[in-house]
Length: 304
Image (cartoon, rainbow, N blue to C red; front, side, top):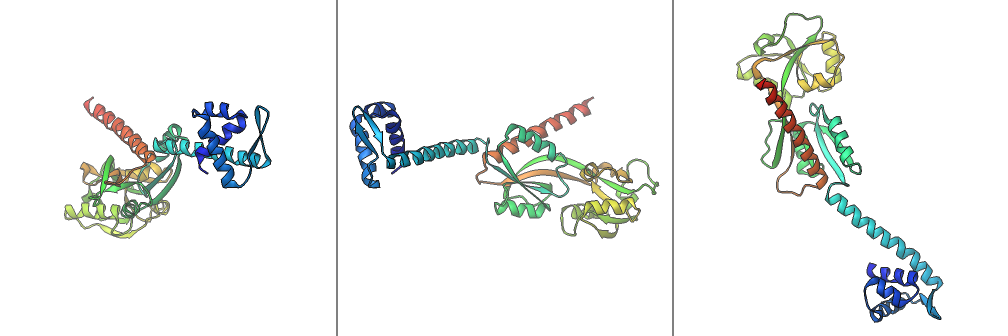
């Protein structure tokens, strides 16, 4: 039996006449009678019996009718869900988030959830280089990462570029306003990342570009602990602006590092030449729209 035969049988039971059921299903009576006969032969049971003008359903027919209703309903629900997944109204958004990125992600997800309330989420946080591997392995479809990285195999949407800040405890008051890398190279620095990874590399590369030798005394990838250490005057650090926005309330002073000598871009990536689910595509479109709004706002500010 197939779903088409089950629909025929439902019509026969509900109309109680072959002629009426055939009209409902837009077929002629002989093929419908033949389909009923095939079902009875396949099941080895009589499904209906004629009493006068109308058909009566046997106990076997009642059992089949119950399951036929369930199965056709499931089929309709499956078709509806697949269509919703296809247009992004349903489905699953799988996304990786860099440890230091996407300070606005909660707001973005709130907006996305409002537009697509049936979408579910799988969100993983890790370093950018590892997130690239997760995208390549199809563990997640999208990843918000900190650039630069080797991204030959990915499509990239640039979201924003942010400055870095030199932070100290409130006990230190040597600087007012912005600072240069030369100003801070002698301070004992705790870097907010692990050697060989993105932010760690960006900071050391910036010092190297100006032939400076920073006083690196350690590294701490636990940002909450890092902020605790800095506020207790254990040392100083250099952090992306995102960290200051995400970790407020600490007793620290922050000084922007001048002239864009140290900055970092954030972008969202996905695999080139691979299928991107509609949910993921809708999320990319949302990010692109927000990025365009931010860029136009900045252009307007600079034109004032």
